[in-house]
Amino acid sequence: MAATILDGNWAAAKVKEGLRARIAALSAVGVTVGLATVLVGEDPPSARYVAMKHADCAELGITSFDHRLDANVTIDELLAKLESLNSDPRVHSYLVQLPLPSHLDQERVLAAVAPPKDVDGLHPVNLGLLALGEPQVVACTPAGIVELLRLYDVDLTGKHVVVIGRGVTIGRPLALLLTLNRPGLNAAVTVVHSKIPTLGDYTRQADVIIAAAGSPGIVTADMVLPGAVVVGAGTTFEGRTLLSDVADDVASVAGYITPRIGGVGPMTRAMLLGNAVRAAEVSVG
Image (cartoon, rainbow, N blue to C red; front, side, top):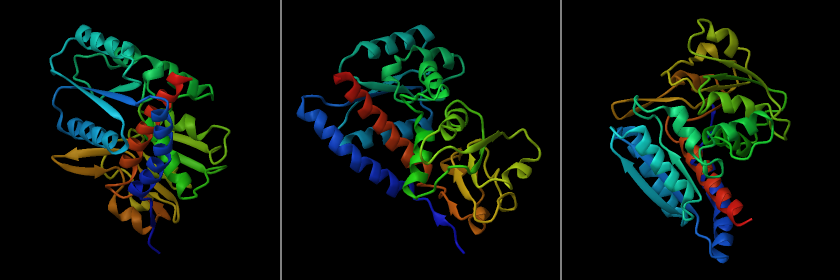
């Protein structure tokens, strides 16, 4: 039996549909949602991703501000730009596109974003609130994965979820989110990573596998329990080709699976828009 495809484009359209009414309500009281991006350098995948975010904003009537900085920008120059965005009333939320050039301190940069304007949910305050079980702004990819599964009626309550990857943008916040005592969550979560030589020993016990290691094909069919849910959240570019953490042969074993293109990516961008709308709503009380 072929796996059910977890169509992120379909799910993202459902999310956007719900956002339109909220954006209209804000417009009715004179508020136009404002989202800004900061891109340092000319990394092609990052530039393409930022362009897609601006296209999403245009689709929903969100005003977007595109800030481009030279790859050699100093940390002080970048922090000054962030401070200007923190104080700009037109900008309800913004993001600094990752990864940053190696000479810039990523943790220091993320900490400089005002927590209420942190559309990516990566500020230490927002990550801390998630750890405390009181999330305000949730990182976009973890939130998108959870919403994608919810829209396909995948209930995680009591399920064993193996998350491959421990990064701050996906693995760590996702593990915290999945364990929250909330309807549809309440999962038992095991976090592993690419340095573990016997990954299959863990994944073959999982009802749900979420691969976020950024290691192409790290999950193969022999590592998957028949009928399991498999989400490929980690991606790598080989030239212009997008490679997934999940090998193609997994589709012959899984019960549900995300496609290589059009799975988690559209949902990440949709949840970014949701965070932007929430920030605008909070700004008006």
